[in-house]
Image (cartoon, rainbow, N blue to C red; front, side, top):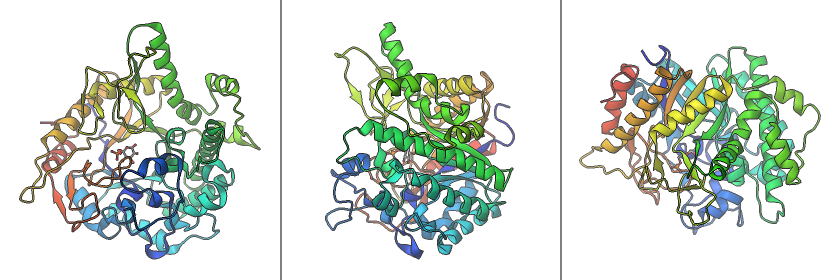
Length: 474
Ligand code: BG6
């Protein structure tokens, strides 16, 4: 058998993309609540441009999302029907600390997640909890400037201590920051950092990254102190870079590209800033704001496992003539002529998943966990049914590749959670029409719809995959 007996099959979500109920039960505003759908989305998403207030002219998809807040029992029951062993969700920080810097938490927020975890427990589903998934209370953005400010480490420590204490015995697996490398690409989304009026934006990005890295190590330490059974993972938006040609310059560029993302896991898994990064930051004149016991905390609290999202490989070239860029999340890449693309231009590369898993395992020799993978596609609901064979085919090929990585290459893989197991709002575009789920939610891009849930064809398919521990994929 390829996969371990306790392989954690399941699905993944994020609070801001599914919960809705954005002002209910004491929840405070969060950075994602100010990111509108439509043409004005990207400047806010990346850099926090604009007034940072909501207005009547825009639609903000996180406000209602797919109303998981009021549907979680129904949704978790559906996950159970598919046989989920795990369910990945994230905490909305501003439900627990509405402004972010309070000393005492909001009990209603804590209760909400407690009920979810108990619901999971009822079905034997292991929660996998991301502490922050593109989520920073606006109180921390406005008063402190988000993760650029070192004080965020203290507020985060207060958050994690609260969560670990309260959910001890209910939650074993934690992830500290979703796609921590996103802080370099979209600092407002990933860290509430506003770039407007900043001269050296690269220095700001690395400062925020350092604070998150230190906070992540503190979270690992605090978790282990509160409950040695807890496993705390790092999380990387992964996908290896390919060189466009065998020109050594292209090969070198691909190596540099990979290093720029591994920078994060190198620190989180090995416990120190890698030599290539120290040199590079030095050359750029960027001083990383090391303070007090940062070095020791990083060194002594490395990640228990490495989790990753994988949507595609990346392609790079040094040739200025080769500039046919395609979309790939917010990670720029050239168009690879050997690969098909999704309706949103994301390249589809199952073998790239095997390559990525091997590269990570070769580098760190630590257990891996794929916590996001999937196809965003337009689904058609006809007579209550969605025939999403394209999704089945995408997932089948990726599961085969991961099976090869385990069975043929010996990669130690803990589990696999597909992205958006229930339809939710797209992070990059804010659309509902970019659907990933096994469960269709009646909701459109403008916020119309009944929120009614429908099982897609892939629902029954995934159930069999889980039942047979990945043996039957047809
Ligand atoms: C990952 C994020 O980058 O990609 C998710 O962690 C996101 O939050 C997913 O939803 C897919 O991206 P998109 O833009 O299709 O929703």
